[in-house]
Image 1 (tube, rainbow, N blue to C red):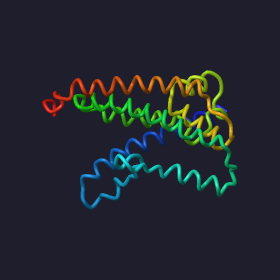
Image 2: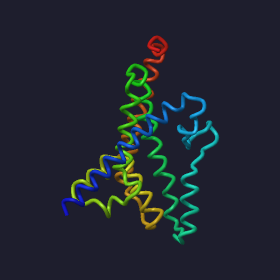
Image 3: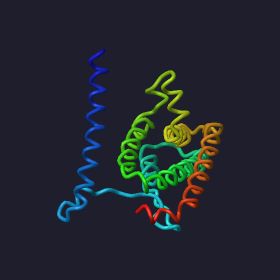
Length: 196
């Protein structure tokens, strides 16, 4: 049993190492004309203020139709869950944008932190089924991405109501982060050109 757990941790370390090295190689290859294909990535989100491209959601709905997942009225709660997620992302992004001007290595640290949050957020696994005890309790309360993924899974696949209490708490935290981030940008906007 100990070797199986050890093998899982070794696999996780190899996957994380490969992603970091792959990201670095992709970044370096983007500067070479004939290696552009190594740095290929797909961007989703806001292309301009009018068009919102959420191709992942379209694919999810297509897979749901294919797999026979029943559509319920609970799926309407996808919209407030995404609103909470976008507000949190915007607030954190504004704060990181402010500090990213003066701290040169913040981009590298952010990349590593985002990969860690990605693997701790239950994208490829259901946190409620795979994790037990305090780890599950803390992940679903301290990681807003894990909370949103868990709530999306509940409303889309299980057809139940989301946890409005935790979504409300993270909405409040996200609004506070947005206010802090935007005020930082407004206060220091004249000094950014001096730093760059």
